[in-house]
Image 1 (cartoon, one colour):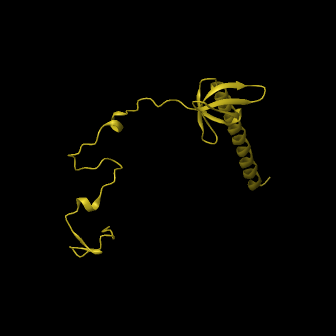
Image 2 (cartoon, one colour):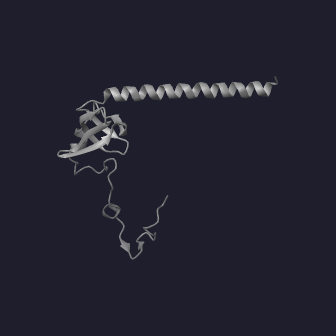
Image 3 (cartoon, helix red, strand yellow):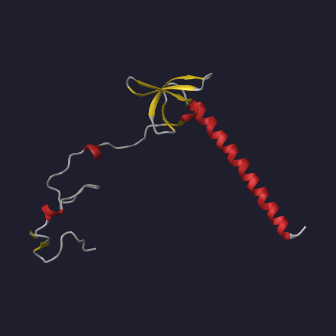
Length: 138
């Protein structure tokens, strides 16, 4: 056998090995997911709907999912993508804290009004400095 044929067979064997390994890993992950899907668990479906499982019908492969109080959806069991766990250690004090009015620094993500903070007065489309305020200086 020539070396090219040996290399091609080796590459083919590696591809087959990784295909079986990936398949085994996916089936193990799916089995773990199915074991965690129990009534009362908060889940997310493949199409992005969050809800709480009310009941599971094993024979029909149906899940009753309560999305909001009083709204119950019937979905196929395989559409449940993952079990949602609450985030641990999140601090809501930074979000709930009132903005300090005396602070000159904007908070992260806060838009600032450029015209209110500018000492330049605008005359038409050109300010006193002679620059167009619509164009950035970058």
